[in-house]
Amino acid sequence: MKKVLFFMLLSVLSIAVAFPQDKDAKDQKKELKGQIREKASKTARKEAKKMEKEGWVITAGALPLDKQLEEAWMKQYEKEETSDFPKYIVANGNAVGTNYSAAKNQALNLAKVELAGLIATSVAGLAENSVANQDLSQQEAASVVKTVEASKSIIAQEIGRIIPLVEVYKTLKNKNVEVQVRIAYNIAMAAEAMKAKIVKKLEDETAVTHDKLEKMMGGFGDVKQNSTVTEDSVQ
Image 1: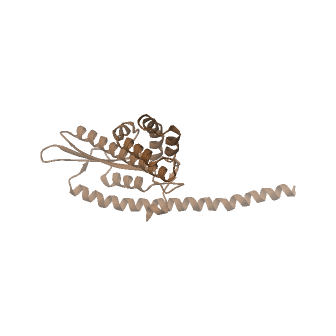
Image 2 (image 1 turned 120 degrees about the horizontal axis):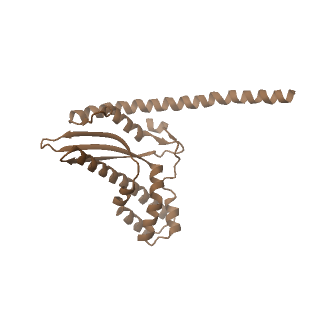
Image 3 (image 1 turned 90 degrees about the horizontal axis):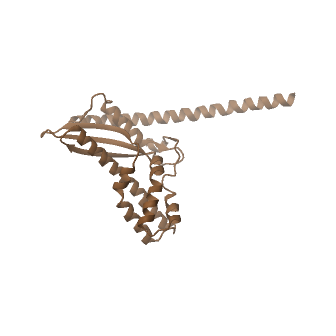
């Protein structure tokens, strides 16, 4: 009986010791996120004032411009919990059209093309790293980079659910409408959607073997879905 009581007491003490530590970690994370929110809010207010002076306005029913920009900056600051990599890719698009809808669609397409370019840059970086790791020859790496660069429009079409962050417009003197958008895309989602397709295209258009391509692409998007902000992002 004494042994049972001893182990029960030991368990209670263990929980009592662990709980404050967990609580402290949560409080620290909450405080850090608050600091980043404050920094994002300050940057967003400054940017919103500048854009409003330039004549940019929001659509009816949308969040105030400073709030849209605040969320955009938060996405740019957010990091993966297990690394210093950003969780989101953020891209911009700007277009002019004869009407709002046409300009908005073109701006979104341009933002997706920018996202595709950022993804292509990541893959090109993997190819260069593979040369250093002796997985690919310089000729193979150059072939990969060339193919990926030529595939930006295809990658842009494959991009799935984007996160709209900012949407503003202004009417120009000639009555055309200029629209500016800012969107985000989850990097882990990008990796999941693109990895197999990029490997297939590279297999079809380069002489690099499947095993080498799979090994190279293993570094693309290997990040955890659960993320948080980090101290580095506050600096």
